[in-house]
Length: 222
Image 1: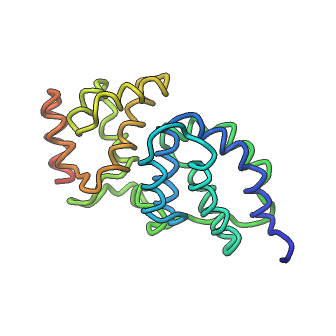
Image 2 (image 1 turned 90 degrees about the vertical axis):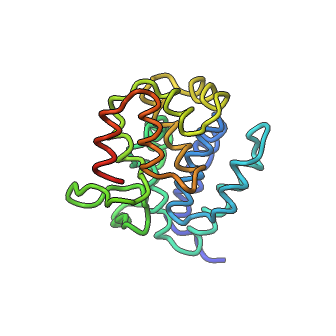
């Protein structure tokens, strides 16, 4: 076997920090699995298998997510830069990754142009130039956060999006601020709801008495 690439070495050195982050709770695990799937670093069955299991988040469960990433980086160094892009997202949960981000930046190979994310890499990015999502498109997390900024009753919204109350309680325990809770809830909804649509958001907003906002979103995206 030849010498390890700088990208693989950087990834391996960051794995302990990443494992500690993922051991923090199911919310972190679901967020990370969803991002890996969006970046095509793991398959949907692999992501589903990791997040659908019940019980303790042990080394085996974490390894099921990390081993495919290591294998991808071994085959293609550019996959490391897709991995880095995950922690540059604007999701609230990525704000919990400061320690991990610092570790990655510390070990990141120098003098190498980073991967530039494309539409194919991540559907959860807005169109260039600030252009709004097309009508009928699946919601992305960035646009959801912007459009739902005024909504403070995140639990009520989550219930109307068919997220169980026990899950909402868990989100509240794992996060410290209301905005973090709302963003974590939206991430879980997008990750676990294949049929997620703006129509669902509009209906949920109407039920929690945000009729003006619902009308505005309907005009833009439905």
